Image (cartoon, rainbow, N blue to C red):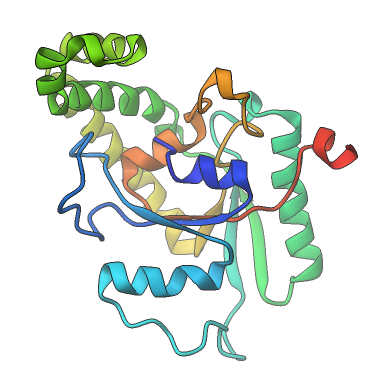
Length: 239
């Protein structure tokens, strides 16, 4: 989870994560059949478009700009169930981005805070269980034949997943369906939701890739996402 959105946020580049199933996974080494999806990193949003077209077979628009008479882009500011686990820098960045868009682009962008549906609350835990179960089955050959070559962290993750039963898959998919139904009215009101991709700035190398908590629910739901760099942490900005 978060293997596209978090690196993009940490490195200050844009990213597009496709709706699950939009891009064929032929030739991709699968980790989790219910979670795997592909995306593209780029320097600028406009650079994503030819890649998206090539991967999906869609015809890219001749002009990336919206028509002059297009209605304002409707964004919902969704802090989400894990808001207080984000760093002060991250929370401030999202709030300031929303305020800046409203102030500087209010004629083309409309932003409204929205309540987090209660059905989002447990999705991260369901995603963890589903990924653990499916990755342990997708890596069973390596586990059985190259156990000593696996990292201690990977061996522990596969041990945990092999101890889970198929009921975790059923529970995760049911929770995902319930959350998708609860989100449907929001996507009737808004073109997109403005959210955090991570709890904060990039961790130190020795601490790994960080916690994907803020992307787990969206990964389970299989929704598309675009990540945009908007701010530096206060410590970096002051340096």
